[in-house]
Image (cartoon, rainbow, N blue to C red; front, side, top):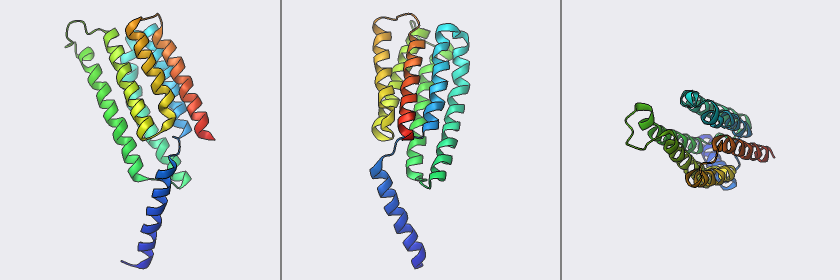
Length: 187
């Protein structure tokens, strides 16, 4: 191995250690993207429930792929492409998507047990997504913590009271929390 290659590897190791210690917030554009997707998508169950599943079947994966592309592009532009961190982000959100699909599957196939309605699905979905955001806030991006708490509170409200237009209200609140996180990340 030549000295130049060894020096480059050592510098990459040190730079990676420094980046891991800093735990920068996420990319603002990704927060803004999901704020818009959630605002629209969470209003659909209240106002056009027949389109909600179709919307998320398309918007979920498309938003995920667009988030990956935007995050990669931003990291390269900033000169901070950390492949290990990118892999952890990718695995976290891929596994999260699979868990959300598993929650949706009984409703989509018509093979749901007695009592598994759209309302039950909604509560389970909200609980899973709150946990997904909470784990992301702990392990990847602290900017998602407020959204996780808001979603967890929405799960409790939805389970105990089922107020009218809860999905729209939750969508607005979560979208605002993601907007604030995106603005904070821009600093």
